[in-house]
Length: 415
Image 1 (cartoon, rainbow, N blue to C red):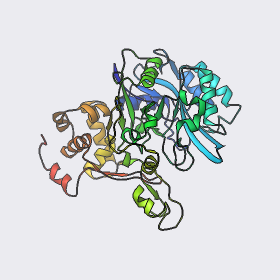
Image 2: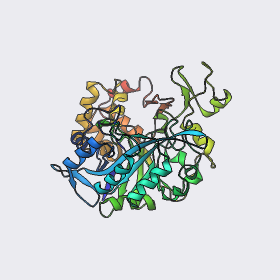
Image 3: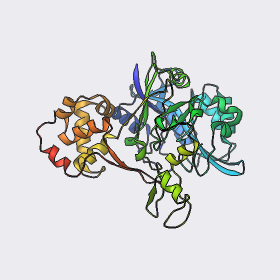
Image 4: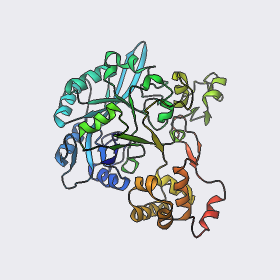
């Protein structure tokens, strides 16, 4: 059974999330996107956990579904923010936890509730060493997964330039052997991570970290398993068997909002080489630059660019369909025209992933505008131009050069 999974999302109980980040909306958008297994997010929050228990029922072992629905499967997940001092430095590490049952979740929450206020945020901030969190989670069940989130983002990650470590072992110490996966984050992709030989022992997974329903699946994982269950999914991650863990779906990392170095307020964006020329200080204000993901990879890498480990899980880089439509017709992504074209192509072909990954040229040509069909093909083939993101600013994707859209739109058919 081949399916798409997105393990890292948030509920309406997390800060800066959409009000409709509820189970019904998530189920609806999972079908639109083509996602079979979706993380619940935020199981540490009492209000969200109550909601999960009342609206979900068991499906396959360790997976759940809405009581009134029978398509989307939910897997119990949460993200926890650990802020603490270690090695003479303040550390800020975000950790994703996957759990096999509500009973295990309750054990985890009971311990964490003694450490911090779980009601304050869907992603709680705890004064807890990441190693100690791993000890608590794995003490509740050895079947849990502890995954460093968005591993390179500057402020809140295991390798972040502002508050991170230089290795998994430095962060988790003797619990490093229990870390089976790390999340690439929007600003890096597997190819960048392959440059670190120390990461060969873990799986690289990708998730959306969505704060609104329409953003789920912007990064995801594709599996092919003989049967569906919590154990079959986590085993595929732990073993990195390419027959079961097929590939990840990635942003083009340049589009992520921390890919390059820079200063948002000064509108300064620099490559690692350029930052080095300025001694990692902003040429406008003279303050330290926010060192981005690409620079941090360069600092830690012990392999050249384009190195690929043997048996590495492959990946495919995509741009969300709404962004492709917006760029193809030359309007804002939140416009009515984009929403209309999105609904039209989904109705004509099927889920967003089917459109982006599998739809043939002829199917696209008959289902949408010529320029949109061409945009999808170009993204699939990697023919895009991106102004890299930096210091919290997303990168800008360009698919067409000036004047190309009008030329294509005048054609009756592309293919």
